[in-house]
Amino acid sequence: MSEATYGIISLLPALFAIIMTLASRQVLLSLFTGIWIGATILVGWNPIGGAAYSLQLVINSVTEPFNSKLLLFTFLSGAMLGMIFLSGGMNALAQRIIARIKTRKQAEIGTGILGMLIFVDSYASTMITGSVMRPITDKFDISREKLAYLLDSTTSPVVSVAVVSTWVGFEVGLIRDHLSSISSVDKSAFVVFLQSIPFRFYSLLAVTLVFILIVMEWDFGPMKQAEDRARNEGKVLGDDADPLIETREEDIETPDHVDARWWYFAAPIVALVAVTGFGLLYSGGWPSKVPVEALKGAATADAILWGVFSACAILLAILVGHARVELEAVSDSIFEGFKMVIFPIAVLSLAWTIGSVSEALGVGEYVVSISQGIITAPMLPAVVFITAAIISFAIGTSWGTMSIMFPVTMPLAVQLGAPLAGATGAILTGSLFGDHCSPISDTTVMSSMFAGADHVDHVNTQIPYALLCGTVATGLFLASGYGVSSLTLFGYTVGPFVLLAVGVVTLFVAAYILSEHADVGAPAVFGSSSD
Image (cartoon, rainbow, N blue to C red; front, top):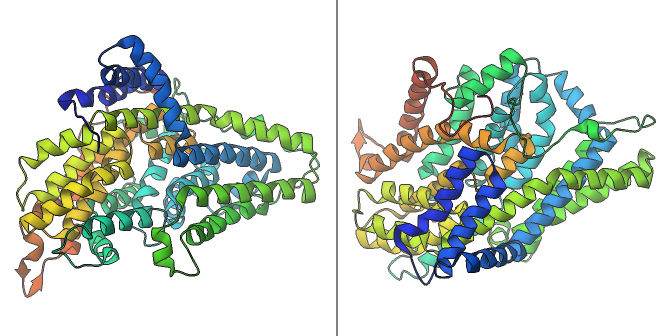
């Protein structure tokens, strides 16, 4: 928690950066301008001092241990992609998959399922699913905006509720820390975590909407424009699109003598997943601790770093030892991979920095102070959900928002007599909702990156879908808060699962109306590359 708050002014840097990004499409300039505005406020409204402090804030962000490890992970991901392109393994695997996928719908379903299956880590899931499925979705003229949406909506929403993932240790740890400070509550943190899963309305609805839209072949808003362009004109990217990462395999040619094998791609990916999973358990104290306890203390950044490094090492061995590729060619491919990720790394660095600026200005405390004045026990879940959404949208991090919300919400829920499971679920899924919409979110950036999509177009096309799920989720939280989940109908108690079923039906009807009977295919408010 920050020592000082600046009231409504604390929202200015993030809002300015977000609006400027969407309006001008100049991501780096917009983010740094927002940082400069925030830094200027922090140093007493001195613009010269603010400029100097801005640079220091960027340095502080990129040298923070977790962030620096994630940047190294991204660099190594680029090196891995470069070597995969050189090996021809991705094309070989894609051809095998393409031979079995016959329609656009199958390609989209395959993308969604693969994203859900890699539930250990959201970054790894985004990278692997995007890398595997991008050439396949391109073949079936699926827009890059749609691919980025599929990646964004089947990674973090799934990983956040998985009982074995990089998120579970952090989430359970927060619950444990704040339950231990409340003497009147004697509950297991892991049990509260499990009980909160049915109340993760937004997370569960976001995944559900993906498959509703795919199966029913519906789209609305700017996404409908993007899909019509791709389907009718064969353009997976808009004419003015600026992909966040240039992932063009033709930039790295596979040597003629190499007989590309599908396992050239599969082997390093299996190593990435296996080493990451082992790293999570080992860094948390396994085997002396049981897996669930080990995951609570796992070093997430270390685990994914070990995983991607192992994948690179295996690729190097394959290229030199089996494919007989010269070291010079391998070195060139690694540097080409580095070039692919330079821009995303710059975006991530500035996104983290503006998030830290917003926290220093007291965005969380300000939003919480406003919401506390209107909270009653029945309204608690919905107000907490909306508050978490606003904070995470402004600071671009779901984990940071969770850290802000738990110290306030848990004692308040106990004081008001509100169910802890519902309050916990509202914090966790509300933090994900805002993070899902925000253009300064690292997961949003990573989705644009590995989909090879224009970042602004990804944000513009995803926001209507996120808002739809968020609106339905808010209604479900209101219903649960006002006791609907505890009512008895025909001898059965209406629990959160029944509410969730009602939410799915509502989501289906709303998606049908928006897709088939509403004129919402106009260009995005902030501009689109397909204008």
